[in-house]
Amino acid sequence: MADLMFQKYHSISLALLLLFLPIISPPALASDILLDDYQQGMSKNWKEKSFKGSTRYEVIQEDGQRFIKATSNASASALYYEIEFDPREYPFLTWRWKVNNILVKGDELKKEGDDYAARVYVVFPSAFFWRTKAVNYIWANKLPQGQAVPNPFTSNACMIAVESGSARVGQWLDEKRNLLEDFRRCFGEDPGKAGAVAIMTDTDNTGEQAVAWYGPIRLLSKDR
Figure 1 (cartoon, rainbow, N blue to C red):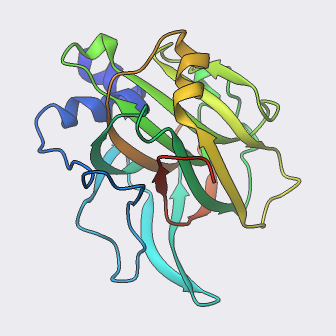
Figure 2: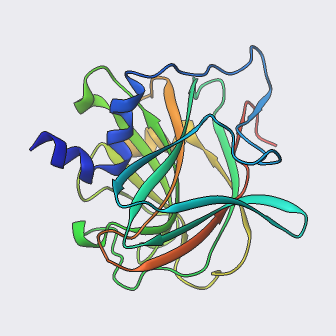
Figure 3: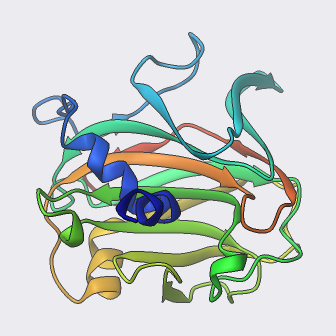
C-alpha cells in the first residue's frame, strides 16, 4: 500500500530517494547557481525517476539555444537534480519553458486529472516522509493563473499555476518565482533546506500526450 501511495505522489516520492543519495551543495557565497546549461548534453547530476512508464527527456538545440525536450505519452517520469540549498539564501528560481499543448482532461482538483504538460518543482525532504513537502510550479490546464491549491493526492504538495490554459501555447516564456514566499504561502511556515529541483511532463492519469521544452534553471540570491 505504501509503495502505491508514493507512486501517486510524484512530487513527494522523490524525497525518499534523496534520503539515500549524496546531495550536491552550492558553491560557497555564489550569487547565483546555474544547474545546467546543456552545452555538453545533459549533466550527469540529472537523474530520472519513473512513476508510470517513461517520459522521454532529451537535449535539443533550437535557434542556437539548448533545451531539454520532454515527450510524454500516457507516462510519468521526472528528471531531478539533487542540490541542497537554503531558500533564505537563494529565494529566487528562474527558468524558461514552452509547451505544445495543454491536457483536455487535466484538472488540478481531481486525482484523475493530476497531469501537466510542464512543471518545475522543488522538493524539501525530511527524515520523516510525512513531513516532506514540495512546491510545484505548473502550466495549469484549468486552474486560473496565480492560484495555488493542494495536490489532490496530498496536501504536502502545493500546485501553483504560473501559466494556465492554451493562450500562450507554443511560446517561450521566462519565469521567475520567489520560492521562499511561495512556500510560506502554500504551507504557512518557513521551509527547511531544499534537496532537489525537478522537471516533469506527465500524462499518466489522463492518458493523453504532451510535449514541453525546458530552458536552464537558476537559483538566485537576489532579485534581478
